Length: 355
Image 1 (tube, helix red, strand yellow):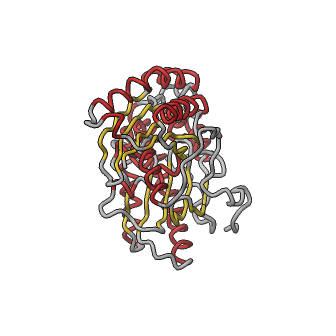
Image 2: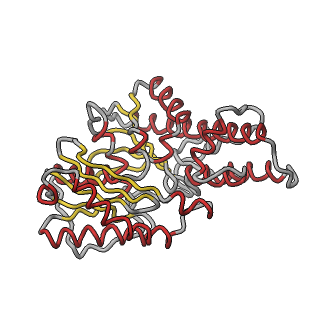
Image 3: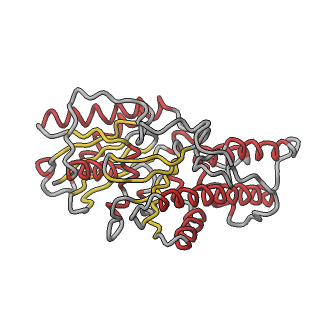
């Protein structure tokens, strides 16, 4: 079975053709970074308009390199939430129109589920259920037990900001470019992480939640203390390294606590999966790999090209749902702006046991 996947939830337009044998027949991703860089973040209206202009030519390009063409496509899938609603509507409307015209099944895919299932496309051998997932991106920071397709239990989430958003805001405070993740990582390579002690949020708490607003505020106070005088390159590198080290300490501690919960429930899964755009950070990968090794787990992370938003994971999620016996979605399906993977999870604020 071949699925045409479409991803337009933020600032990447992506199209992929993926088979149920895990073969990626085509995968094209177009970044909008140049359009948004001047604003220091994604402008939803600009993003939606660019998706609209780019999507159809990209679908045609993907099909042109696939010998059977559109006749070889068995289903169409698109990100239907969560995300910037304008972009989500562009992708889902295009996918539903194509499915209607060709009489194909349509799968409305949860963007977070796409990230959650990506290692089952890329890892060899793919991880068995259940496994522990750390999902870290510009808009999300969660720890979940992946029991199966459509079956997730949230252990922890951020009580305020996502880690990727913190990278972007700190990069802006330091006068670095957008997106902030790669900029902070590059600057930190030559920095001293011990020069500016910064708080590692939530470390030591008995729950599995995250918080990054206080860390951002600490960097803000540090920058304000310079009195408007632009810092030299050494100071910027040292702050970047100190910030990245604080993030790593928080992620390591929070994930370690989640491993305890995961193992305490006598789960049999042997994998710690990290997914989402922040999973591309080499230093954070190394920290999590070391943590997993000390706890007897293997760390699985997608290739860098599949850490950020992409259509291959959307097509694969549809294939996983079909394999699990889950039905396709009606064309009358309406996109929703928020899709929690675990809708029964209690609110993060006040949840858990205080340290």
